Image: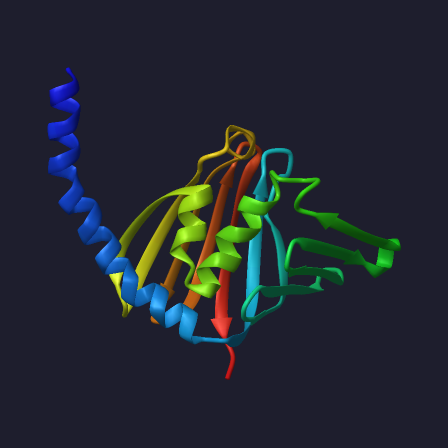
Length: 187
């Protein structure tokens, strides 16, 4: 039995190495973009709603670890991640909440799915997810499945698609619904 496991691992190793090799140019292109700005349209489908919720806004990335999501429609919301902290602001409701990832470790993988991808940080992605990569630099796809059972209970998979060093699509499939964000980079 042990011999069969070792043989299977040896046979699969070249496949895993090729997938990593194919992913390397995409991660390098993402890492080379130190800043980016994009508009987004996000649709969330939740089991308890008859139709999807649509939101619009702006995403701003600044290396090494600053990610900001500014929702402008249908309400104003600011989500800022910098270092090990997340800030959520909803001015219309008087909400201003700060979360430290050390006190909410289940939040970190969800943030890192986007932030580590923007940073081209494959090692961080692999620390939090089973990573499947397909495509090449002109058009690529990452499928991320959480390694943490706590995260997996809420989010089954995250898919990111892009072109070169830009993310164009993010989908999150969760226990209670699905969201799809189309991202359009701005100059």
